[in-house]
Length: 492
Length: 128
Image (cartoon, rainbow over all chains, first blue to last red; front, side, top):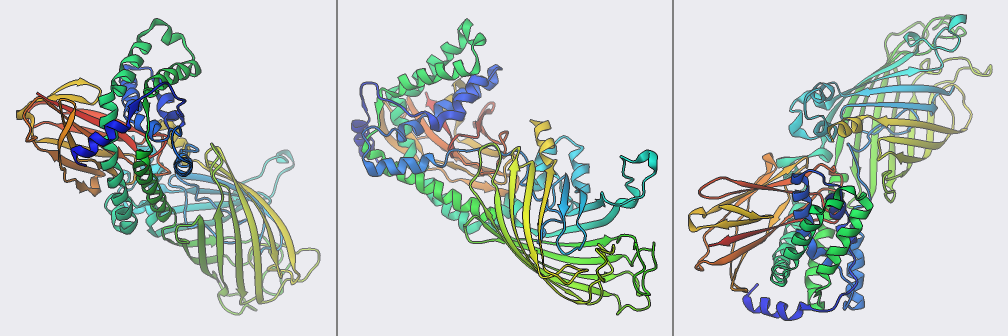
């Protein structure tokens, strides 16, 4: 901008009588200063508050036409609604028709009740861990690992996750252990997973490569905004506002009573001083262009954030399942009290967001084999399955996270009598035969505790289950703990 | 270079060029955006100094140099650095700005996560 523009702005930023100021765009900065104890924290918080004062000026609605007020309202909508500690929850369990491609970066636990294609419902506890993440988290930078920061744990093995599932309905109990379950016999499944591709945690150079188009768009708009904003900053400096705020706040914090004030009272004192200083400057409608540049840069940033949230993830996994004991003989294949053959499953899971919408699409394909062929079986191949899920991320709830609503369809082709999980005879109904299973699921997942704990509730309709050729409508509920956030909290 | 106030530095001709490094901490990428440096003399804008930002993406950093202004001292050099934070950035994420003069010790300042993006840092160099 040329000096002539500067002069023009000078005439428009006039000193006027006190006007009401909206300090909500400085809420975090003011609270940080109110909570700061050490001199270095106070200095940092004071500098951050002082240097963001132009936001209050830009968002002052007085003397702004109706159209400008709409822009201001839209900018204010970008205020931070919540604080999210730790990585986004990637946990999923057996109550999900379609598995999530993400595992916790360090450690997680899931408890699910219900079933999908199994005939007999049960309660399963799943432990999920990233061994490399656990080892790296033993060091100093556990918080960064929990956030999946590539630079904090530079090893291929961080892409590998392990899970183990335990069916709480299993296990023989002695009379004196009536209230205890023995884990030994409850083991049902072990899974090893490898992330082949995960652009959602791209950092550094990869971040710029993967999201190049969105970054260039955001960069151009952010540059335009800062180039405009620096003139408003100069205006405020010339009007003496930052100096006044800095001086008066330093004097306030030096008073003997400051240490005895509660945080709330400190916030009130700070707000009073900032309002007094800002009241000397009335924003002009000529700031409309700068305001528009700001809004456009915020929109571009949102598109970039959507691109990150919707980036591709491809995961492959192998799982080993140990079926239940047969309570009754199953033909000539499984005598009473003997386990059916163990199962091996190979699975690919791919997730990709839809444009810049809050919609995540996940597809998975899997094939399953028996570990051995027994007399009467049609070979090793048991089943193949594929499914898709559309997950809508709903509006964030402050301090909780974003609930999700998802719809999923799953198709399973049973190549032969299942003989796998859920083999227990059920209501005297004969074991099902080979054939097709179709399943539809609607699920709502509620977050709590900043996404560290999620509670999925789902309803499922299927034309049959593995063992019974009758349609079923079922409900499932679970709870998953993403313990990554514990590591983040510890660091903070 | 002498630190005389919050993000305010007294500099002499020997301090130029001033190297500024913006380092992102606990963020996926460095997204610091710097304005051109505005030169203010006796209360009037008299010119600007363009800066060319170099990205060091692998190290989550970017840097640029501020050359000596054409104007004679005394004058003030004012620059705004906007630091953008990802939506899922933790509370502890920040940007550290290191100001390294041609001679002497570096000064550092930190930009914390703001209420609304971007977090701003106003650097003032009093050229005397």
